[in-house]
Image 1 (cartoon, rainbow, N blue to C red):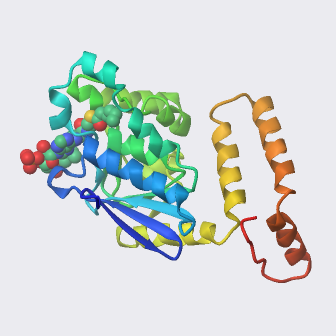
Image 2 (image 1 turned 90 degrees about the vertical axis):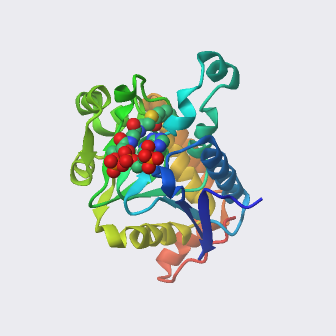
Length: 257
Ligand code: HXC
């Protein structure tokens, strides 16, 4: 069945996913997350997709998990159903993901953006973890990924006060890679995706995996992981193609093999 809460467009080997639940500021109800994680899984399996862009509308990327849906939940249900584990499917996507964030990225919306590999922000974007105002705390990575992105003190301040942080500050602190004029944001994210899509997909996926290892392990283990992955790239046609093309001053033709 076709998804109802996300819009999916595939062209030029890029999958553009637009969160589309305007009546509730793209708040992330379980149907939306189910649709999104199913689509991402499908992108991983689809050889026609080489990069993924996730965006929302101009006013809101996503205003968090759906508060209406959460209101009646019990602890027992949360535990029994392991509530929110399906969110982690987003972070488990193996192909490169770019979040193009315009407007509000709050709570689960900020957490969703942080599960992507690169965040580009529109100049009016606002990031925050306001769960504390609802009598709860972040539940999909806000207390972990935000600290790694911007450091403890400011992350702690945002998580404990619920205040928002604008796009410029988010860039200065390293949460987002760049700030782009609101109207050009999606186009720019597509350009980044297209550039990545032009390279050897297994190399892109290995590079992504190595960068992500840096969040999981010690430096020595991470360096070993990287070195072994680097060694393995020499098993690929694409590695030889890339190097000999450079030396012969021609454009490489990668085959993903
Ligand atoms: C359900 C939401 C919503 C949300 C907004 N709406 N955010 N519904 N869940 N997270 C709905 C409002 O109820 C309202 O519905 C409509 O969207 C417009 O919102 P307003 O508040 O009237 O708009 P505005 O005054 O412009 O303020 C925008 C806003 C504010 C700053 C984004 O809506 C806001 O603070 N939203 C909540 C943000 C938040 O707390 N997020 C964290 C959620 S907890 P009606 O029917 O009145 O039109 C979370 C936990 C994560 O994410 C755990 C892991 C996933």
